[in-house]
Image 1 (cartoon, rainbow, N blue to C red):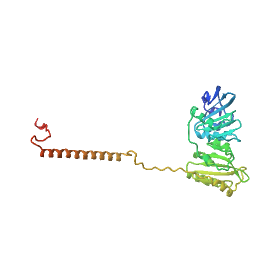
Image 2 (image 1 turned 30 degrees about the vertical axis):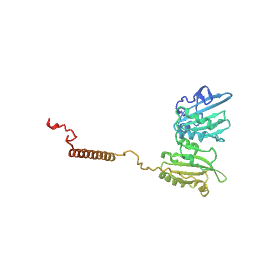
Image 3 (image 1 turned 90 degrees about the vertical axis):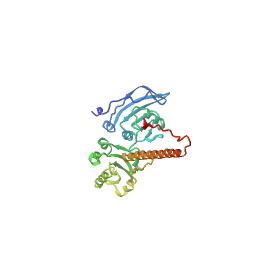
Image 4 (image 1 turned 135 degrees about the horizontal axis):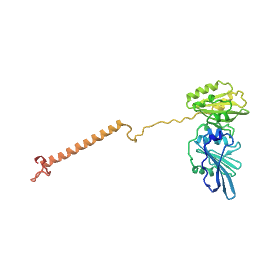
Length: 321
């Protein structure tokens, strides 16, 4: 039943991967575990293919998601524990014999070749349905004492149950539209689990922080819409005084946007438009008046100083006809 929840597969891999040529037809990738979690992350389609260039051969698997958040969440989840950051891409990690990287709404895993992030970065743009999108800001609040590759992203009930066991959807506030970054951090002589929740408004965050703070086993810190919760691995109470130093580095960075008047912008409303029309009409009337006075004055001057031939102006005498 869970396998049926994933969308139908569609062609993903092209016939060439830079200098590598695809060998045969690609095959649909199907999840063997965590199917419900793949679906929660928004998996649309996935496909594997073999590529070869000379004596170099590797297997490439691509997963396409609804958005970049799902791709980021899957990258954190699927990244091997011993993986190291790869050069050339922000979301890229290399491991013995391969690399896993995410960009936009795609996740790619290469097995059998030690490629760099710079080598696979251009490949994403040519994949069908690729969309370059901004990434969620939650991972940027992870403190430096994190345990490498321990980050997991919570988007719903399945990921909450997988990565933050013991927390119900109601307690976390999933009905409020919360997202969370869960990870392991170095704490004292061992490790502790840290969850950073982001709520839609600071008001909701304040209410949830007060609720979490009632649990004496937790250390809680709020900054704007962010609520950070530190908890012991074994379920015992954490030292709140020691936890303060760790949690205090998690500070919300709000973006303030201010509209400033632009003196060169076009007319903004009907009142200004009408005022401009009247101003233009008044200017034209003044111009016509000045022109008429100039012509009339010149004619009077000409008549008074006309020679024997009379005025130089010719009258049609239309009233006599």
